[in-house]
Length: 136
Image (cartoon, rainbow, N blue to C red; front, side, top):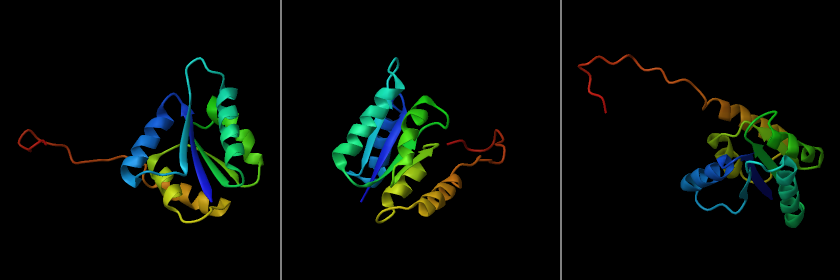
């Protein structure tokens, strides 16, 4: 079984959780932790550690907001454990893919899902509108 942990600065992880639930529905295997202003980053690591200890042997995928950020640095220590993976660069497509992938995920499949999620990040380029065009 897998558990996905969203970890971020502020309320980004909570917002991601809410947005993913709008699309996927209620998900028992998704939780979030946000570092509050003025809070020490070790506190979020302690919260994540407590959650993992309470839920026993699982595959844990921790999705962080920012590579090199204090949240990622704090929870990266867990990547040394078996069946714990830390991903940086949280985006909704990736989180949904991780959730909907059946069964446990190994390193190779996680890397594939990360690569697939990158295709959803792009620049939208439309033709310039003239004053005669209808703007919706």
